[in-house]
Image (cartoon, rainbow, N blue to C red; front, side):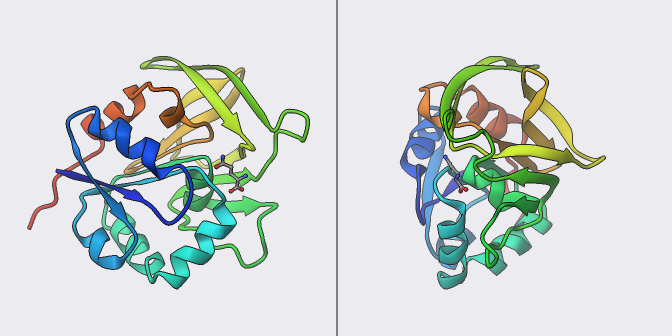
Length: 192
Ligand code: GLN
């Protein structure tokens, strides 16, 4: 089993370290050939509008969209969550998304004074220390979406089938439990 980490921009190295700490191999995904070699994909935090442009120029957008539609497990954090959302509010007009999870997210929605903060996240698999960096806010959740984690009463960790998305950065706290959840509960080895 190999977990891909989208490595066009942003905090991809920390995600790869979390996965490797579980004894699972990773591949940095920058081309369609890299994508073909992985069973699942992590989309890191960073800048979603830049990643959107790079996804198109690298020819990765269409093959990733097909793989997600075929059931490839994918986990997006922060900018990665924005890339997976069905609706982006306050996005750039040319910004694309995979529409893989039925949520509306507002970019940079936690306000200027609190662009970055840390807080406790409650989930069925335990409490997490959540690091929020210019984080998106989930403003709407579709019927098929399961809320797995909350900050107060706001959803910050959501899942719809093969798609997991967090508005915070689990990879920056040295806590690989969510990566473990992804690998154990969502990652399937492809049938050849
Ligand atoms: N604000 C960024 C965006 O819109 C996301 C920030 C992050 O990933 N830490 O893409």
